Image 1 (spheres, rainbow, N blue to C red):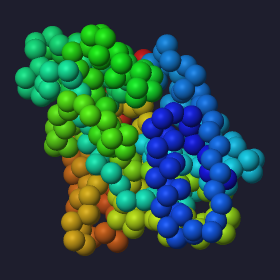
Image 2: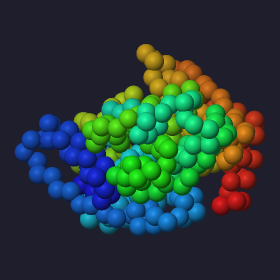
Image 3: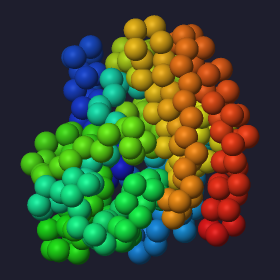
Image 4: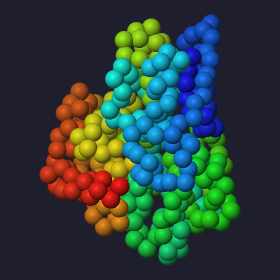
Length: 303
């Protein structure tokens, strides 16, 4: 039994995982159970105002721990860096494009947006980085599933909205988009990747999902989550982090931003893949010494 959120994107992602597993286990029967999470229910408040832990995963993880499902399929960026006791990430399939994209009816780029343009996003990370580049932009809250967000754009509520490229690709949507370079807008830790969560000690399910695990993708998202953990941030804090593998090297980039975009602390690290966790921890420690802790603590006080 597979479990996921009850949204079109979550269902599409679950189908990708199911199809991948069927290639290895053609005789195995799969069932899918959908669940509504806290983040799906509360749409009239900003994410950072309703909590920072498990907004889109808690109910699914409870079903997993309770034995109602055998594995959970998440957008990995939604998973808290510290999982509930008794759960672990069993597999990370090959990662999709991790970038954010600017979506508009006019095909705007970040540079060509009109002065004072209304930009929709539910992410403090995105809004802080956009304001760092374009302080004139008017950032407006945008909640709801992918279809709802796009509908609000089409109705003229925003000049542009910012979404994850991976979701657009997985749904095959035909939109006017401009990808945002990672050098300009760092993604959320794990963005573009799926996390297959299982019960710790469930060896049978662990063996089952391991066949679709992509080593480099798993290595990179683990390193990104280690940076986020080391910085003391959560899914809703204005922290961007991205890791990529180049031959036998892993390259890590991270940034912490003030909400108004005026302060940006960036750093990076590179080294052998085998040292990914050590590099991630060292990167977080250096950034804390540069003043990132003050930014994060100020955010927690305001929240």
